[in-house]
Amino acid sequence: MKILLTGVTGQVGWELQRTLMTLGEVIAVGRNPNNTNWYMDLAQPDSIRHIIREVRPDLIVNPAAYTAVDKAESEPDLAMAINGIAPGVMAEEAKRLGAAIIHYSTDYVFDGTYAMPYTESDKPDPQNIYGKTKLIGEQAIAAVDVPHLVLRTSWVYGGRGKNFLLTMLKLAREREEIRVVDDQIGAPTWSRMIAEVTAQILAQASGNVSSFLASKSGIYHLSASGQTSWYGFAKSIFAHDPKRSQLKLKILTAIASSEYPTAATRPAYSLLNSQKLSHTFGITLPHWQKTLELVLASHCSIP
Image (cartoon, rainbow, N blue to C red; front, top):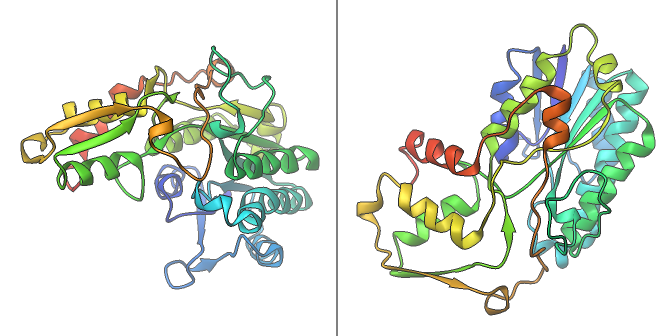
């Protein structure tokens, strides 16, 4: 199987490049022409079409996205090009080749007003540009009628890149007090777990990956089990940090979202129900605290 993988310098893409290697030939593309053999500009449809037609993959795996949630409010056109238009172009090219596509989306497609974890059948109602463009990307793929999986995940973090975990650890070594929002609820999800689950799904394909995904096409929620707030996440990070004796932090304060205004509105509750994925593929998703402990224990180089 020949796999075209985008976004290889991102959190999920970096992990996918490693988990997918046992399943076939992985052709990694990035946005920096100096760092990868293949360069794809996701804001330019012609660039996307050119690379896909050159590589002729059996499967396109697309974790690449415009993920700067607040900045997207002032760059809606760029966010739309990368999150909304590019996935549809990839899907069109995949169909042209008889290939399949796996795409990643977000809990931010929901408005956060539910009191129960969102299922795939719940109606999206994104409240910010990032969520709106990601939803359009989902819809663009579905409209092409190509074998596909759209995997929605939430609160992605890991031992590299830019994410809440690394930001908290950095701040805790610089400040005596940190204030963290306590009224937004979700499930922190390790980037490596997302990549491993993707590989586990694909490992079930015997023969043609397009045929396998054609019978299972659709949206699936892929998020760690359990729930917490950003404050609860931060509290757990510091409690399990093997280098906590080095922390300057003395006070961790819980605050309301209103005390930390941002350009983009975040959903107050964006917990995802991942039972459909578990039932379809027989994969159990671990509790967010267990994976956090593993990340902190295994990434001694985290600053």
